[in-house]
Amino acid sequence: MLAEVQNKEDNRFARCIEISKRVRWDIERDVIKGRTFSTDNKFLPDGLSQVEDLDFLDTNEKRYLSQIQGRTYANIFGLVERFINAKVLEVSRDYWLGDQTALEALVRFSDEELKHQELFRRVDGLCADVMPAGYVFAPDADEVARVVLGKSTWSVLALTLDIELFTQLHYRESIETADNLSTLWKDVFLFHWKEECQHAVMDELELIRCDGQLTDSERDGAVSDLIDLVVAVDGILQAQAEADAIYFANTCGRVLSKEERDATHAVILKAYRWQYILSGVQHPHFIEVLTSLVNEEQGGRIEAAVATLM
Figure (spheres, rainbow, N blue to C red):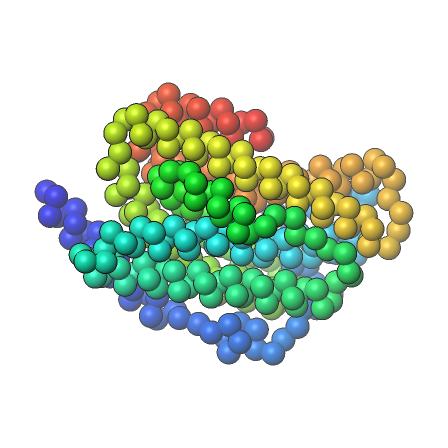
């Protein structure tokens, strides 16, 4: 039985390698292609930005707020891929002198994550070229990575699976189907999605492998670590929502009332919590995987922590 499970895992890693080779892309040749962003279009679709909740903003202001959120969206991905890549390199160590198929798949995973970080740095620079000065991305990627990597591998892999799954959800259900977005911005996340699909498969395989090595007590501690990570992510989102609301108020072209500023901040935070936490933890496959690993009490603790963000 163990051999059958191992063969199935080997086949899934081999499949990831096959797809990685087939969809491989270059930032300049395939994605950017010498283009710049046009501020005539939204960057983030309404289903993610939730700008339509702000009925005191006109069409141009809603479009501009979607562009601010879109810039942050790219920067958040660049942030999380810093610690994801470090963890992937760490777990690949277990295959250095063993399963070379798994090792190649994880090395490809790491190489693609490094490329994605470069892509999102390019996106931020292209945004800066067409947006007013004053935008601030609050968190430090290396400092966040140090905090995250200080937690158990199980919790980091669970958080990573959450991220990889909501990446796919956002693209397929919101970005791909929107017809009023910047074509360059859509292409960025099309090509990002092409490689993230394989990453989610490997995240799940490594999470399940890691879980099989834990005692009940260690797993309970890992669940606590996952809750701590969700709380830490929310802290990052609160800081960035405040920074983005201030930036919008300072650069939108008119003076917002205190009520308008407060409402803008509230909607941005609500949108960010949906984008980076809730859409992932409510993903059917994430729920399926997580509930197969934790007991009822542990699952209840996770649900209670997430409920505070609703």
